[in-house]
Amino acid sequence: MHTLPLSFALLTYTGYWRPINLKFIKYWAYIIYSIVMNFLLYSFTFCGLVDCFITKDLETFIEKFSLFLSVLGVSCKVINLTLRRDKIIGLTDMLLQDICVPRNDREMDIQRRFDRSAKIITICCEILNESAVFFATVAQFRYFISTRTLPLSDWVPYDISSTTAFWATILHQTIGLIICANASVAHETLISGFMIQTCAQLDILCYRARMLPSSLREAQKCSISKEDFKAREQRLIRELVHHHRFVYRFAERINAVFTLMISVQFTISSTVLCLSIYKMLTKNLLSLEFAWSSSYLGCMLMQIYLYCWFGNEVTLKSTEIGNAIYEMEWPMLPVDLMKILLLIITRSKRPIKITSGYMITLSNDSFMKIIKISYSAYNVLQGS
Image (cartoon, rainbow, N blue to C red; front, side, top):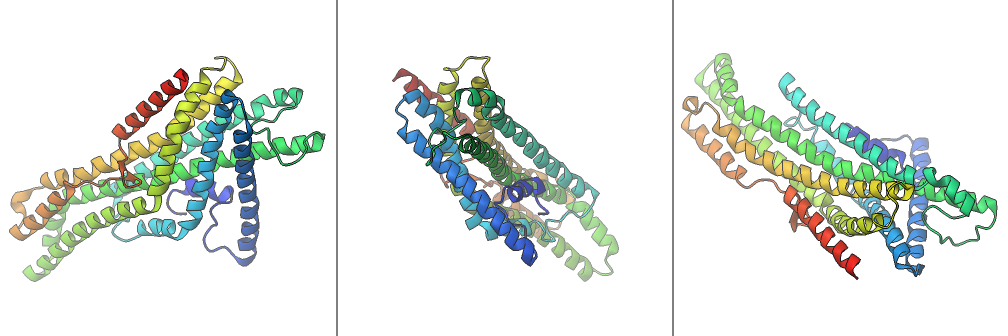
């Protein structure tokens, strides 16, 4: 994909995003590959959840449930991506509209800066998640072999007494966790990446607003008559208004496509955070179990922090449009143009808000509230 290539590449490699315009043979080969990857994910999820609810020890239940609750969340995200595929493609296509494409070197620099941020964030999240997978599985293989235990889930619908079945199960759980980690990174960075692209468009819009007087002067020099200048002037202001409305519409579509999954992620992360903290305090500080628990906690924190941070950035940048217009050289503008610009300033006072389930606005305050709720739940759990 032309937008957020790393996130879409991860989804493609894990089998949950079929590339557009595949040839006949490649199309069916990818369908088969996708079926296999879906089977691995959902069988891993099913076995883990069954194992959680047949566990009688509370501490073991908390340890397993805190993991497989997020695995269940990944399964829901994959379903959401399949159901919303056309709308997600529509979001990427919106960024190819002429109004959104950078027009000069300065706008290209703005776009590259935000694209680079999205790329760095995806790489960092991938490293964090793969570190958690490493500590949960590969780093403890010697222990699993010596004790004849499984890494994550002890329940499987067959006998693992034979060496072949045992190794096949270890491999299944390891691959299942790797798939979950990659699919989770791709999904979270896809949503936050679209927020980053919204910020990029808002920055480009602010730049174009600040440059409007210069553009008008240039148009006046190139005009051959007053009527020609008036037509150029109207085209420039029309493009500015259209771009402003377009960015708001783009943000609304992001809300419509992802708000349900953001809400699911908020619910899961709030629960997992308190369970993970409780689990960490029962582990030896220098053990691999503690390293696994702490890296997993970092993954959960990163997921909701990305949503809240970039949701907050979108809101802040949408209010900067009014400031950019206010900073123009107003004395040289005609009265009718001033009236239109005042309407844009008025509209910018109602900033863009990315929400979770249309109820919770994604912001830094929301992130702190989730941390407080999780800590309160942890205190209740510790006291019981």
